[in-house]
Amino acid sequence: MVMHFANQPLIGSETGNLIVLKHPYPRQVEEPSIYESVRVHTAMQTGKTESDLVPNAPSLGTKEGYLVKQGKIVKNWKTRWFTLHRNELKYFKDQTATEPIRALDLTECSAVQFDYSQERVNCFCLVFPLRTYYLCAKTGIEADE
Image 1 (cartoon, rainbow, N blue to C red):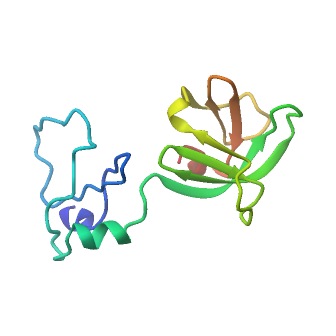
Image 2 (cartoon, rainbow, N blue to C red):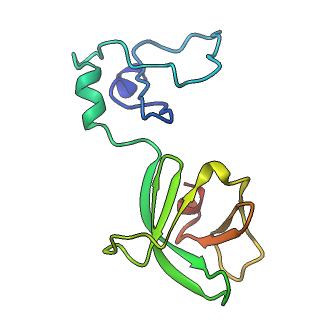
């Protein structure tokens, strides 16, 4: 397990810092109150250091792909290209668009839950103070992610 996670980030914080497993996690550990202060500070078994890892590692909390989104007023469903980067979810008309239709600050989102009220499958909703966004993925695994 240590070998597997030696170059695989385990936890990312808001600043994008990566946590790398060098030794097995102890059974009893006092967890830090915030993970922001945790830094990659040891050389990995491969001999790489933090400077080798961070620039080449994929950004944690980053995902992109198509989802189907319900319109706000007309309530029709449209396929949109979504990008997630840390706490910002943007959606675009398609993958080639350079300007987002909207950027959502996920720190303002009060709930994310599966939505079984739609006639579609693999739907979930993002609840914000002024609006609830209804989205559907192709698969249940994509909706989970």
